Length: 198
Image (cartoon, rainbow, N blue to C red):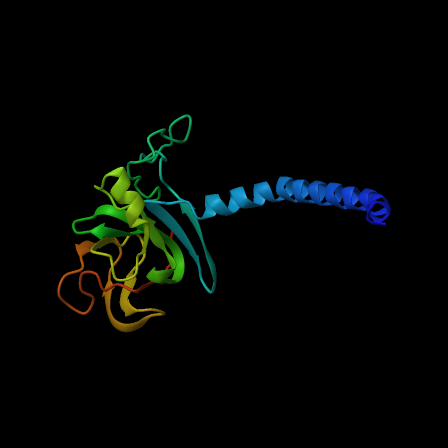
């Protein structure tokens, strides 16, 4: 009896197995590009450019490995991706991890509010490969030490969404966050009022 039941079920089991194998292979093939895009979007970035779009969501791009001159090289990129790139537009607000405009930095252009917690820096400078891998990514919230304002006046705030203590800085001004309304490592949001680009 068992042999008879097994013989009648065997073709169905084989077909089901083949169907599952084909379906999972097709899914893997079609989802690979999606996984690659997600991995790229979350890749570590030492210099991030953020374009503020008023009340619309900001757009970002990683500047690691790009040329630092105002005129791009013929290839547009430099093979060494471990060094920092400058922000490509001198008019951008540059916020730096360390004092005196040094270390990792994040660039803002356009107009609107940016909450620093929404952006991360990965693999702190000056660490060994193993130590950098262990550090992972850290939010920019309460980490900034210096700035260069670019073409727009800027308001710096100690809390998200333009709340908390704040200080206003004029266009094309550089400085360190020193004791005052917005101290070193207390920046949580920035507001750029002008959509200037130069």
